[in-house]
Image (tube, rainbow, N blue to C red; front, side, top):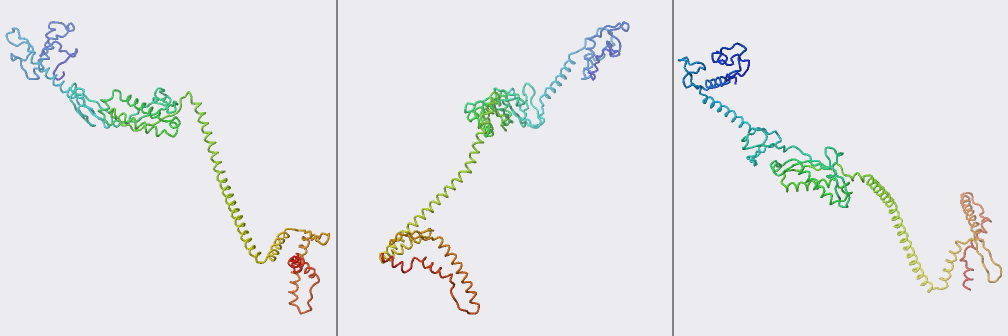
Length: 438
């Protein structure tokens, strides 16, 4: 407006003046008593300046806004059609430029631009400066495809802010369990994300809730609470991806993280008691198993030792019986050859075995009524003493042999020992003759 020369300030001293700064509307009035400016005169001044700007002339060839300098007759009215057309053209050009400029848009890094033509997706654009046809022909929308989005199920913001309608689930053994988990996902198809979903995040939340309810419903409560948490999360992720792909939602599930898995708060104390009882049971089972591991090997070793001892005893008995049978057969052969000699030999062997463990012997003679008492223990002790004396005598004899020769004589102490030895010998000729006579 300044370039066109239009001044709309009320402080302009040329309000109501012509081109030569001559008063027109306030002519003949005192300063301070003038009325409002003449709007018609302002419009004529504006049109005249537009005509001067675009090089248009008045029909009579006079560009002055005052008198024509002629005969002072009536002047023809100003021609306003040309100025209005020029103004409208300029405004139209400006509006067209603004309208075309409204079709430009910028897509940030990590985003994708989706362009609609009359409400239908026509194409997508990458990051940077882009242009489309302005409204109402085309419109655009940017989608963050690289952003990791998170949907929370069973809680909002904090696990203490529970959503019981989402978190309570029924297991295969008809127990109720409280599960709170988060799903992280990103977009793999922005067009499908915008066009195939009415409420995108709510769709992902409902799919996650449906999937985990199906997985939990196929497993026992203890499995979900303890050793099966990772498996439940993995199977839930796979099932969610299958459902979302079937819906053509354009979502790629990244991870499923179980935040809290526990029984409901109403039965938490009873469940803790049951868990403690189960732990005590496992502890006692482990102690019993440890005791069994200590006792059973010992019992097995003892049983094996007894089996081996019994096998050895059986082998010994069998071998002894076999040896005795063989010896009996040999004795039988010898007995058939010489019955008397063999019988005496067997009698002597038997008596030797009996007397070897006897310390006293009572002998009953057939010819008399007296019993003969033989103190074998004393006789054995005396024989031992005699053997010791004989050993000493031999040592003395050996020493005397080294001395000068002298008359050798047998000590008197050795005579009884010879007699005793003769008595101890059960194989003397008289005894044998007596037995033969019997």
